[in-house]
Length: 218
Image 1 (tube, helix red, strand yellow):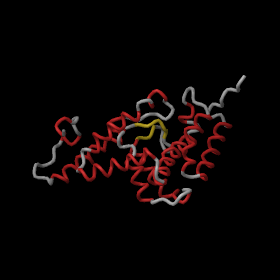
Image 2 (cartoon, rainbow, N blue to C red):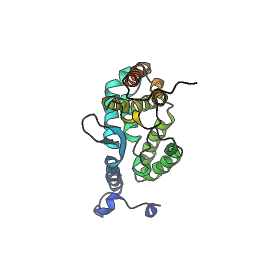
Image 3 (tube, rainbow, N blue to C red):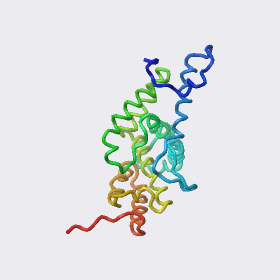
Image 4 (cartoon, helix red, strand yellow):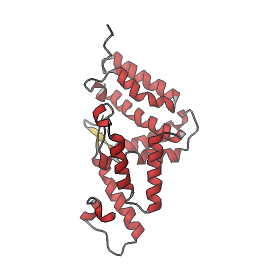
């Protein structure tokens, strides 16, 4: 029920009573997702000494799709893939960011984000709520070439930022270069050439001491 929802940003300065109902719902959603700019990720920016936020991350992914689509192993619809990367992190407004290498936090990530998706997308008119939820589900399920490429961009983008930071989150306590390779291998599901380049950066980062090599077995 709409009255049971949390207090929304739009409630701080309510829209005029005579505003079109559909437009009111759309404006309310657009104001609510402004919160994406406040959700901090772990990745450091290349251009400033701070961490990036989810809105910056999503924009960067959209630009990567435009520029790197030619490297997809399968033909993709670029516009549709951009929609996927712009929608995929919106749920973190309510669910929060889950660091890639935080195993404990990742245990209930799927459940938390599904609940957040229900709550957030329901702010929209029914047809748009269903469309955005379908986009979010498509990204999570990775059953289409577009979703696989979108996921690849989601893993490649912080790899580039960590390279620029000479380690960044690769230096997370307990994380090894092999852990990084395992977490990033999904890039290869969409693009063999981009995964080859990604592995090259990870390997070189390890060689330079920017990530930990796995301890040799006895």
